[in-house]
Image 1 (cartoon, rainbow, N blue to C red):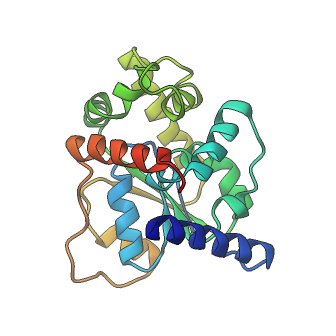
Image 2 (image 1 turned 90 degrees about the vertical axis):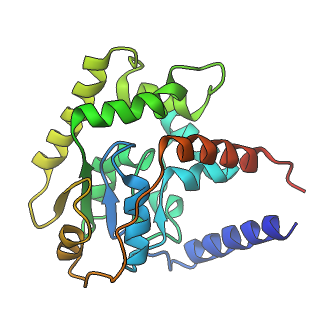
Image 3 (image 1 turned 180 degrees about the vertical axis):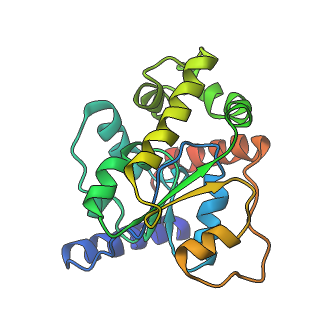
Length: 232
């Protein structure tokens, strides 16, 4: 009961801010695909004070957000971005990263983050995690399938195609923004490039890491269970 009350209180606070016109604008927009260190980047941004940061885990945890994104991805619903990101200063990861063009126009002062890793290492990570969901519509009929078609046109069994989509997204993001607005962040680079880009001091802490294959599957199940729990 306590956790449910807390979630309702957070939701009410977000909606109150929205209707009062006090919603903060996004300051950071992540434009990269999942499995590029987005969960670590989320935690890094929050440690640097640019948070809360919106991530797929926020979507999976709450039925309201999950349903909202399904309507956007599958039905083409027109999102109200300020309402979608109420209470957040940054966003990384899917599903928001599918809309980096729209978000960068809507929030013209926001900086763009593009975490990247080698195509082969990215695909190897995807094959153990997100692609297992996308390739199993019976077990994962909703968000994974919506992203499968939005990101890859439904074609997730062809390695060359999947990698080409990943590489094309990187190229298109890099072509769209100036060096002043965009940071292409190589996975494993630590704090320095991110802190220089944001003009903040480096913290005396290790750069976050985690969301291993095992953690990914465990967290996904945990959040699915939370979202689908009876709302008592």
